[in-house]
Image 1 (cartoon, rainbow, N blue to C red):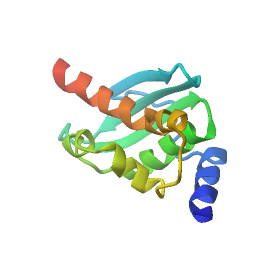
Image 2: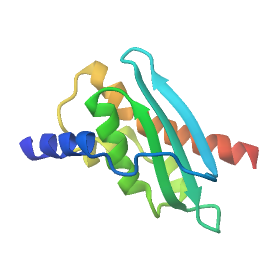
Image 3: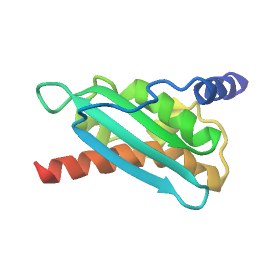
Length: 127
């Protein structure tokens, strides 16, 4: 368990894929008003328009929301949009090492996944 907490803190202090992206194919912002977490994700797709080429995020919030998005961003690169839509909450928790989260913190951890999935749904309905 400690190794997963250490990894979470590393991702919080040294987030991967954090920053703004120019010319993104998908952009969406969302927040967790109960905790104050905010995220904006940007995704660049491969030429096939079905595969994630690059993902970036900006945001602020608790360590769990930001670290979770950092971990998630590393795992989404190269995935098909439909694979990402099919991800369940449990899949994200597995990536996080199944650390114990309070009910309030579950929403923090899921903010990134939910935002990415909403962005994909929006993108696909606007095609």
